[in-house]
Length: 178
View 1 (cartoon, one colour):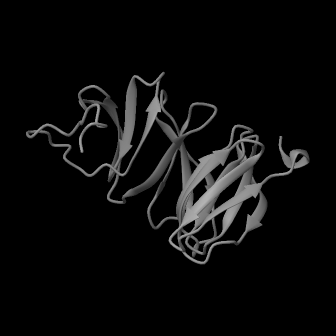
View 2 (cartoon, helix red, strand yellow):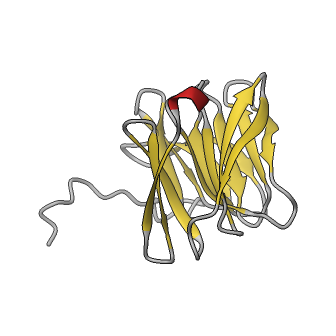
């Protein structure tokens, strides 16, 4: 039933950017979309025409978010680092890093600025950025399989979903929030 599809976009037939789209976020008042496959691109939402290519690597980008300070944060699949890129200056730096055997599976940033990550060891971590340095505040281990997504909920809460077929809801204490 196509009654709910407002518009469908795909790369043009002759486009050299015919990669799968793993993730997308709005940027610049929703006028453009950043999407990722093996690269990160800023595209016109109405046409999927390429505006600017930010990152191109042989590694596949696992996820990306727009941080509260308007930097683009991303990680590569099978990597233990989250990078932050200043989009206007095109400079990238490591935002936070896990131990070598822990690879990121997903992440988000809460409205209070804390970053929540999940890794291949099924751990959820809460991080706080202090002077551009990530400090690990909490480590939680609740899922029994790979964690696929983390979202913010109201009331200092967030939720995670996993291949273990469960959704977990967590509360962060007010006194711990910045």
